Image 1 (tube, one colour):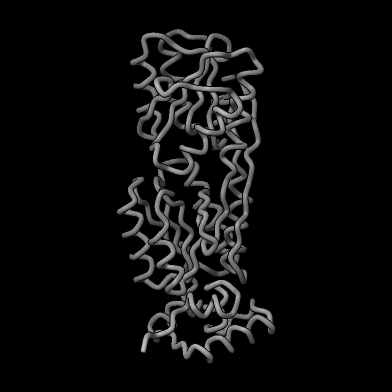
Image 2: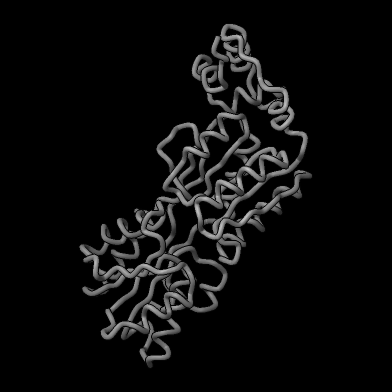
Length: 316
């Protein structure tokens, strides 16, 4: 006879797999009514949680895993720092894993965190595959996607409305009379890249593919791409602030007057953006981390969306 799964219990009880896991592990964050429905579903299906998995999900380790694509990126450094602050306040520890922007490393990092029995995992995923995240959730370990939206209803997330955010940058440049813009983007497969490109085009108008330059998400890479251009556009829209810094350096070396001859817009509003005077889209990192932490401690799947704020500075 086929063994009942956590997913089947959740479906029968009309709740999430995370809620079923919390009932199994006697967590206090489940209402009496929901707990009763889950227990009834477990009994009717004959569900038996795996002993080792139950130990893993018991919430007694006091450890949260976080998986980021590049810890050297100031955006992720701030995310990790804010999560560590909240964890310390709640007598928990944070274990950080870096994937070097690779999906295979993301999967290995998550497996390693499961092996050391973390209670939950916050992951800033590459975003073009979710099956491995569903597998983790199905095993009973909590997962929160940070910054990336997935259509799957079982994945909790604190995501960014990339289209609305980037459209503000496009609309600003169009209203300033700019008609020639280049986008400096990262991996075109990533959810964030696609969303920012779509959003910029929504606000600015059509940008042909030959006006989209892809490169490593690094200031040196974006600097090189701009140096290679024979003719400069009126404006650059960059995937993030680090890439905007690279563009600004290349323009400075070419003797271009930033903000008047050529405009540059970044994304994220990391601490260095204000120092460098980068016009950008501000992502509310602290608020997002707080919501991710609440999700870890809460009861059900949550999907929270944040919209970036347009911040004008001297670069545009």
